[in-house]
Image 1 (cartoon, helix red, strand yellow):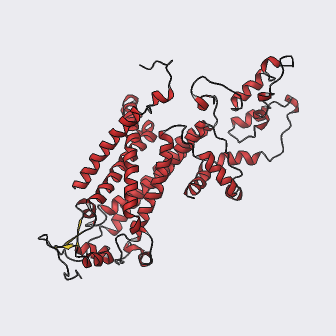
Image 2: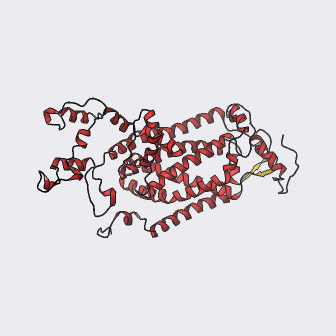
Length: 41
Length: 408
């Protein structure tokens, strides 16, 4: 069961890491599909 | 090669409309002299009836277009095209548009494929996909009622053998957990408006889908990583061999009481493995195309390769379109992603069934990794012999049982 729980924990870590890395790399959709002339907030 | 096979199936589903439209072009052109070549009442009525019509007489009638006309020529100030011609060019995506932001995507102002995609997504995709999953669950329920749980015939020996190491089980559960999350969030995205919004309200549906999209986008990386791990670790055990013929002859023991001999994986498991690898890889590739919109187009190139092979023409689908709008690439990727996912979900439902309620002792293989020798003897006899020779069978007290009496 330890392998299963470790696997599930890994999914959470990988997902959070992917979100963080892609966001930092400029792959957020607002950065990709918008421009400085657009006010989103 | 794989891509070709996928694209063939795609043709059979989504592109039937395109091919039919192309075929109809061969028919004799109707007389439009009364309207000076413009569309007639019959053209409009046919379109309203939902018939496939050849509208090349309009899509090609876009004036001088890119060639342009001198400023002193007729219509020179408009580049040699009348207003209707300019609008037709925009309508048929033939206008030489320039945009300050958004790239090629933003130059497409009207895109027919969108409606074709929406109709398919809201209709056959949901309908056939939904019935496939419900039908699979129903079939498994009927199978359970008829066959019952596959029991271990021999009494438990108390000696165990390690079926899967920690790293194998870890990869399996990353793959399984991520696939279930991706499946549920994918289904929510497809069916949410139909089954969540009417009952829980649009606000809750929207909130759920925002969360679903985050999970779907980010958990996909765990799935892809685990898919690679599983492939590397198990591919050598999943090459078909002669033993599989016995399994096929005895239908895997699914019907009857036979337990065909097997190495680490029997033929049924090999089928599951290759389904997961091939379909999972295809889902991953189309998913990557969707994760990075407009940056990884797949279909125009695939169709070009298919056209060169002559296969679509031979099957009567004519030449597949090789110039697709960026949005159309995404629509095809989404459609393909969903179709293949439905097929894999149905297969995995069967896999979950046999790994849990369907077979006694099967879950231990992925739970603790340790299976009883009696179970191993019944389902993977050749593999068990190999493990015995290596001294990998463990007694209940934890000591090695090398040379132990086989559980006959």
